[in-house]
Amino acid sequence: GCNVSFNITTSMMLVPSSVLCVVVVAFLVFVSSSHGALLPPSDPLWYWTDYNWYHHPQGLYVQSVNPGSYFKLNITGTSSLVLNLLSNASQPTTPYMTLRYSVDNAPYVDVVLPVPSNTITLAKNLTTSTSHYVIFYIKNSSQGVARWFGNGGPPCSLQIAGMTVDATAKTLPLDPVTTLHAKRMIIYWDSIGEGVRTLGLSSGGDLTDNDSTITWAMALAAALKAEISVIGFGAQGYTRGGSGAVVPLITPGNPQQTAWNQYFDAHSRLTSSGLFSPAPDYIFCGHGTNDGDASLVTTNALAWLQAVRAAAPNAEIFLCVPFGRFQENAIQTAYQKFAGDKRTTLIDLGLPGAVGVSAWGASVYSADGIHPLGPRDGQLGSMLAVQATAALAEKGQI
Image (cartoon, rainbow, N blue to C red; front, side, top):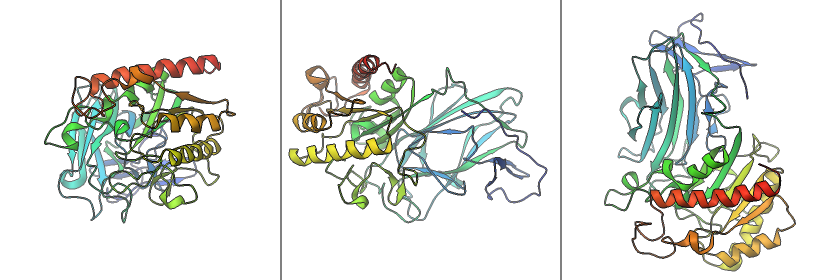
């Protein structure tokens, strides 16, 4: 909600462009060099999906492990945009992540990591007198590379140290109607949340088959006019860890084996007071597809509801039965045990939602019978939106 913009200054002593910004009270100091200036990720007008990106305490970088994470930026006064990445020695030397971006609503460009010199030129030869809109996603990542543990952060993660721009650049507010919605939303899901096999099933694997930017989750967020933080890990569940050595969504009594409140290992998603910040408006959870013991699913789903309610006292929580209706009874039982909470809603799409995604076998709906293809994703997002908006309307929340 901040409407203050910051000019990039060249009035300071020249230092190497690898040096990052310093935050002093409410003012940002931009590092300048003969090659331009570094826009720090802590710039207040640079929007990062609120619950995906770990922000270094000194503003040195942001980091995410989640496909579907994105940033938005509106900027003027620069002829080029060069994104600066960080890496650590444990990151793969072979392809492990696809990034996707657009500048000024041009067709998307995909870039596969790693990249030479840890820089990505998003745009050049821009008109400096006009504003330029950037949207940037983590499109997908390799599920076989560690996404939870690692020295300096998980190997399969994205660290962004800032953007090299002209020294005359200035960030601008994002348009609240067309580019930055006021509502904030989280979804906790599994591979169906991170967009596994939305494009098909091929020998190319995750980087060929998966696309987090075209899932049901993005359609749902658009319908609810919300900025969405997608927290989805393939193979994860209420009781099971996910691909890339991710821990289970929740393990009551064992915080080290609980993922919902952490960006990744030992990096809390919550404030020191145990709250989400900013306070989310909507939280959806659709785990269950990968789980086994039904009684344990009920126990853990209930524990998750209780924990998330404490972290988001005013959020509308939607407990969702997986599209394929896996663990349907167990999840319904958890909801019934939490039924005193009037801001929690159970969504069960039933048989219409399960068509094509409830049993292994390829069809027009799914490349494997479980993971929806892009067109089916759009249908499922619409179905969820109908039920969610009806529940919100009944409560006077929309």
